[in-house]
Image (cartoon, rainbow, N blue to C red; front, side):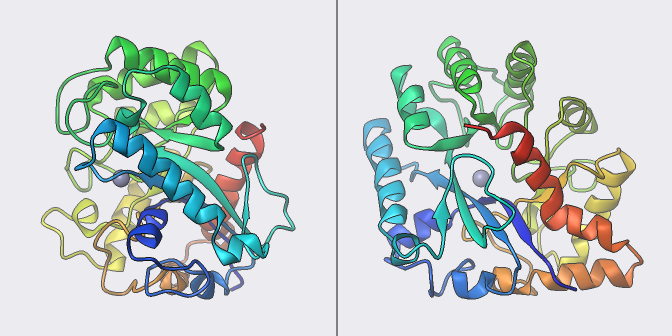
Length: 309
Ligand SMILES: [Zn+2]
C-alpha cells in the first residue's frame, strides 16, 4: 500500500549537526533516501539543545541547528522545503521546526517572538528537571510565572504547545493556557501510561483533554516507552494503538517516532522500515483508512487547521 508520512518528532537535526551528516544520504534514522518511498513526507524537526550547554550556549546552539538545516544541500536544492504553515498536498517533502526544552528562553520573553520569527511552530517547553519554564515529567512541579507567560505568548503567536516531557502539573497548566485562547495542545512523542507506566507517557485524563481540545498525539517508538523495561518490538505498539483508539483517538493518533533520539525496536533501522507497521496493522484487520490516518492524514488535518501563519 502506497503511504505518506507526517511525523511529529525527531532529533535528526541535532544528529546532523553533531555528526556532520547531510539530509539526503546519511547513516541516521532519517534521510531523504529513507523517506523516498513515502508519497508525501512531512517531518517536525525538533531543535533540542544538549543539556550540558548552559542556557545562553543552548540558545545559540538552537540557531546553529536551524541554520545547519537551512544550509543543507537538500534544502538548498528544494528537495526538502522548510515550512511554517501546513504544506500543500503536492509537496513531496516538507520540514517544520520545533524547540524541545525551552529553558533556552532563559527568562527572556522576547526570545519567544524571536523563535516564532525563526520559524518555530511546535513548542515542547520542557524536557527534564526544573527550568525557568517549570517542572518536567520527572518532577511534580508546575510552570513558573515566566513559563506561563512564555507559553501563553507562544500560543498567541500561533505556536503549538506540546505536553510531551511535562510534569502532570505543568501539563495541566499548559491545557489551561491553551484553553484560554481556544487553541489545541499536542503530545508530539508520548504513549499511553495505561499500557506502559512511565512518567513520559500520558494518563487517560491527559489523552481525553488533548482529544477534546482538538489536539493530536504522536506515538513514540522509544522501546522504554513502549514496554516497561524496554526490549520492545514493533508489535508492542499495538496495545498502545488499541488503547488510544478505545479512548476515541481515531482522528488524533499520529506518529512521533523520536527518530535519532532514542533506541527503537530492532525492526526499525530507519524510517524506511516503518511501512512494516502498516503491514502489521493490515494483517490484524485494521482498515486502510485508519492506517493512512495514523501515518499522515490526522497530522495533516491538524496542521491544515492550526498551522496557518
Ligand atoms: Zn523528547
